[in-house]
Image (cartoon, rainbow, N blue to C red; front, side, top):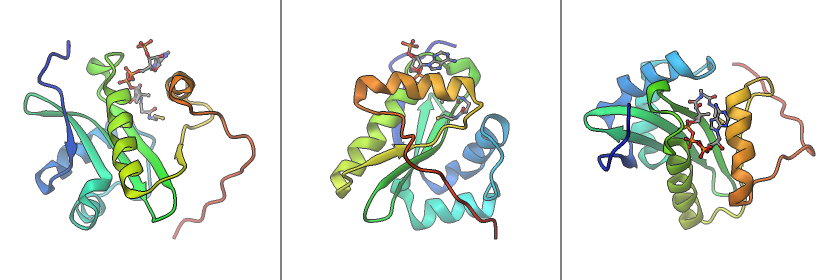
Length: 144
Ligand SMILES: CC(C)(COP(=O)(O)OP(=O)(O)OC[C@H]1O[C@@H](n2cnc3c(N)ncnc32)[C@H](O)[C@@H]1OP(=O)(O)O)[C@@H](O)C(=O)NCCC(=O)NCCS
């Protein structure tokens, strides 16, 4: 489906919660916080940290632009398949970057699963914006 000038990137609102969860459940790697309660809490407590891409009435993409007062962390980026390769993920990332820089971020990281071909292709394309693969760190996680 073609994206025309109706593409809008904006901060999330509570009424977006179900559509965002549907998007992530269908097109993002499963996560421990993929519940309506968790998405609603994110929107209520940190509305500017979840950005959505809208075309017409529908949410076609989303990203979490996490800010902890020190670094920016971009994750949960996903775009509906019929809207891919039209610059929507890039537009979400650029808006997230603008907001994080305004908040004071001096470094921003983007997560891509090692085996996810399209995620890595997208991240490789970010070299034009100055992103580099960081082989310096390992990520350690704990599930509650
Ligand atoms: C990864 C994803 C978010 C990209 O969304 P998108 O809106 O299609 O990305 P864009 O149109 O902004 O792509 C920007 C550039 O990234 C690269 N790219 C994106 N998807 C690609 C693919 N499948 N194959 C090769 N290159 C790709 C291209 O260089 C592209 O520019 P171009 O179309 O002018 O060649 C989308 O495929 C998706 O939702 N995947 C499932 C969820 C996921 O993997 N999330 C992790 C993201 S880090």
